[in-house]
Amino acid sequence: MLPVQIKPGIYWVGAIDWNLREFHGYVTQRGSTYNAYLIMDEKITLIDTVKAPFAEEMLSRIAHVVDPAKIDYIISNHVEMDHSGSLPAMRRVCPNAKIFTSAPNGVKGLTAHFGDLGYEAVKTGDSLPLGRRTLHFVNTAMVHWPDNMVSYCPEEKIIFSNDAFGQHYASMERFADELQLEDVFFEAKKYYANIVLPYGPQVQKALAAVLPLDIEIIAPSHGLIWRSHLSDIIERYKTWSANESEEKALVIYDTMWHSTEKMAQAILEGFERKGVPAQLMSLQHHHISDIMTPLMTAKYICVGSPTLNNNMLPTVASFLTYMKGLAPKNRMGLAFGSYGWGGQSVGQVQEALTQAGFEPLDEMMRIQWIPTEAQLQEITERIAAKLP
Image 1 (tube, helix red, strand yellow):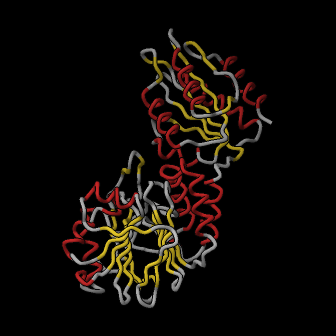
Image 2 (cartoon, helix red, strand yellow):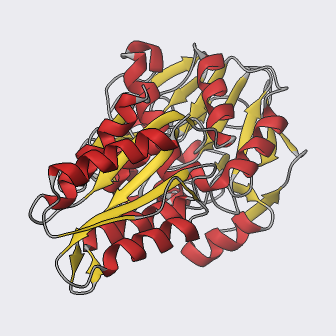
Image 3 (cartoon, helix red, strand yellow):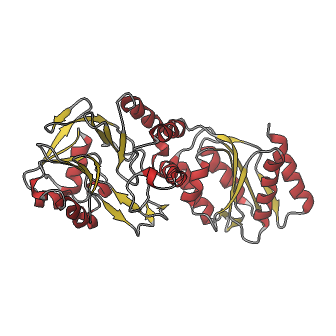
């Protein structure tokens, strides 16, 4: 349980969750980390804690640097329990430490979770002298909870960025440039798509507040630390927060006896004919959180379901509910599907896409029983005709 020095006198002392495979309905095939940071100064400071079951792992790492009882300050950048869960344990270990959190929502949230452990509220513009170093606080409300804030150390040019710029990624490495960068960028995109996507305007506001700062290291609360390629991850956040889409298509579906699947393949061929990159994603084989990663930047979203008991299939309903909550913008949608007698599912999919704010790519496509080759050809031609 060794700490990792990220700059002289500043250490990663968090925990690695190798076995995490689900986070709020989002599958995390690579596990995760809960990042906490220790600053050795006149006032020994811990920035964030870890999920409660990992408190001993964090304390073990801290103990390699200093007796945890000597910690003077604890900064709680975020109330959510994967960040704050070990605060009660820390309070027992260092009963005289001051706990700083955002005003007013950090204080309210921590009190609701853990009772009154003694909190001191800070807001944007406040600073905390540690000795040779100082921490400056910036409120980043709704990135992605009302209490969120980031902490900036100008002397070290480090921003402790909370959930921004993070990834669910368990590894022995602590820095993004120690791994395949495209893997880290992919996990950062998946994290944004499944956690942060609804809060684009708030992300842009937060970026405007923190980007003028002189930053050499971005230390997030999950995953790898950015000590290089800062401009790359920042530019991605600018694009993602603008909800910009590309000329790409996703064809998402479930099927019972392959009729809806045949329609999905015909739709895919329509995009291919016009040179639009397209991807077929079966809900039997792709988790909804994995679908959100390419969906975040795809312009055309086609969703298909056969009818089961006068409804769309539960997998399709689940995906549409999940997607709507993440609120992708500037998309075009298409509902399609097969049916035996009722045929209600396609209209339900269409209604869900409309409620999500998608513009229609075409009228919904319904085929009774098994589609003929002529009907499939017509679908392909209809799609191609709708594209520029």
